[in-house]
Length: 162
Image (cartoon, rainbow, N blue to C red):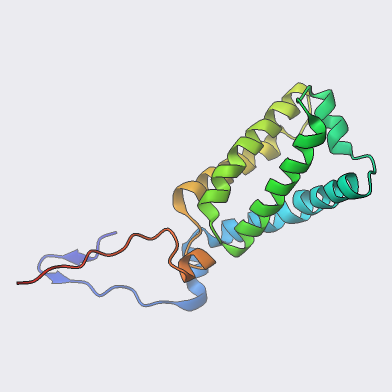
């Protein structure tokens, strides 16, 4: 972004409050996190809870077993935990890049499972892969806990004057 022309530096833009929401990745992050939580994380976490603690059958274990995933009874709850943590992280904007990085192998694994089962969920996996890659590259934006706590920002160099 060009902030100065010639010898006169331009003034930096003032903080515009809610307008910052639309100038960052926050809208993508919050929207994708809410959709991920509503349609995937909440059913997955509750299903994992029922499977682990109440010993009820769970569809994810059966699907992963059909796709020839090793140890589906361990992989399914682990994936559910990761999806739940990623959804929460994206909604809050807390350690977004780390959870996006952890989510990429899960989405690639889901694409492999969807391909093996000839499922129509490949495009959803592709969209979540693009969202995770975008948030990994650009971070959580100005409306996030990362920005509030200055996580991931580089310390400014102190100039030494003599």
